[in-house]
Image 1 (cartoon, helix red, strand yellow):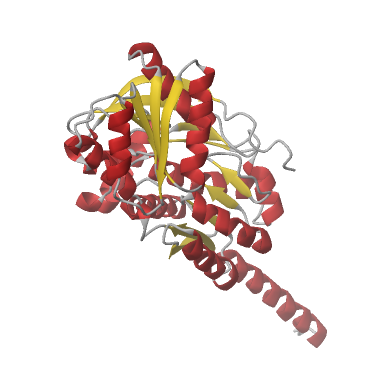
Image 2: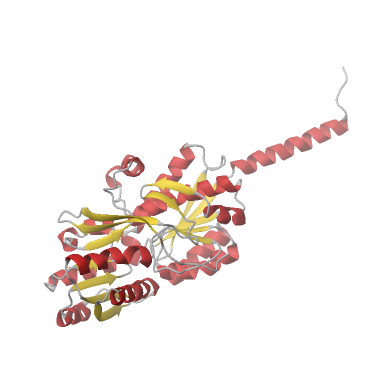
Length: 388
């Protein structure tokens, strides 16, 4: 018998080492960062976002992962604000070395995070609705912007409630002011008039003085844009306690928060890309998945959690299209892929934003949302025309 030469064995061992190294590398998990406001203004909605992330990761892993690699979540509390976001993103990007970030956050947190994302050069899918026109080569947005969300509420008030005068209330930060700036411009363009515009700090909860101004101004309709979560609840309660009965449109309410508010939210109008009553196989799968995984602890699915869930499948599709996790290639692919999720088809190809089907709804006495009208594939308009 002729034995292999030492040189052949050496080459064989080296090849085996390379092969084993490649296999080990392929088996490494994909780390996805999920910074979210577990404390602060977003703490009301954050648990649902975390659950949606966990469900998406489980489903993707059960189906073989992404190019054979399992997803591993890295959850971080951004405290719903800029300072917390800087800490959370520094940890996720430079210590945990996540492969991507998929996150629903306040605009203050997002704005603070973007320079860190840019330094780390990793894909970022922002899944929250927001005030629009935030542009970064590493970021894609799957939530709605004012061009998609404001018109259904204002048009309904003007056409069916004959509203001509409006009072605007917001949280004093990028989202609140950005949304109401667009709302004011849209109202005035339609021939209406804004008779008051007032703000509280992002963590403010005493709306007494502002509610008094609303009563004095006697507007035909009221529209608010707060930080969501806790400010939504405190404002709605104080409006109800003051006995104000004019039509009220909330640009920041989500279905989960509405249900926790009981009859306080009854009658409120909202415009949303997601409601639990959407009757499609994709939405039923999402809702059934939450119920199966979390049972009685499952949070009410809402605008934030549905978009967060879809964000993972958008990332999966982009990685598969790119043929790997190279950040630049994945970012390019994110503008080219589509998923059919709980909200319907989502494709972030409109200057890294998405055309979305919007639903005008009204909160019922039991907290459910009655869909009054749907608007298919509403374009987000010009958001980032100069972004390459």
